[in-house]
Length: 306
Image (cartoon, rainbow, N blue to C red; front, side):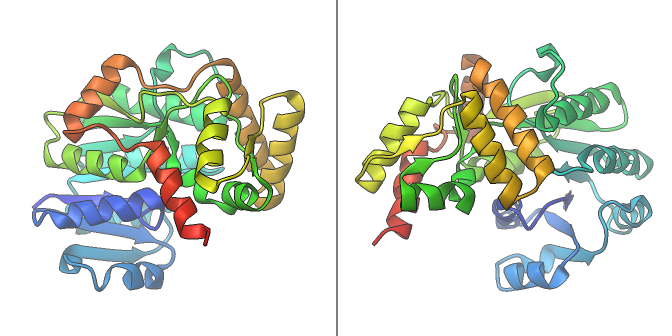
């Protein structure tokens, strides 16, 4: 029975992926967390809870992680980290995996051939590129797969986006040259497939997202139709990007505000897409077309508006 050590289990991807893994009776799941009561409340009444081990501690502590990997005889390590310490914690996790002789690494990266891109000041991109290089270089220690999602649908459910759309008709996230969108449930399903067959997906990157790259005009049309009134999308002008940074700075943090601005400056100049070949491979893995952004928008508006 494969045992998966799953970081960030309390997030949107984690919730969907753990449910997918537990649906199949051949998986055990180890969930490291700083708040065990939260995860216990989330999973204790779900089918398969007897195959879940919730461990409270600090994911940035390599000695603690070393002990858990060995104690539970972990086979697969899923790395999904964000934040200011993403790089050093992820590198330490890779070292722990090597020392514990983990057989599989699944790294949540971002879509595209990062090694072909010029250096980026955006941490979202720069850190993922470095981690991909490290994992791919570490040949022989484990089988590995990179997952490359595009922009999550669920980003739009945050108050920093949805509240402004519903109350003021303003969509505060520019799509610039065009951005593919992705449902976290599709990411979760791919994770399950990769865990189930690590040999088939070894040394591969699976980009996950829509083939369509949505522009600001597309976003305006989709949201305006869903809410029944005009919605205007923020444009990636210097003034627009400054406004977005100030919004994220106030609602999240100054560091995150600047990093988001840098990311959307990239998308202003270069579409964030899934290539035709990568999309065909994704459809093969999913066994269907990925979820549609338009359907997601309709669902969340129906839930929030009377």
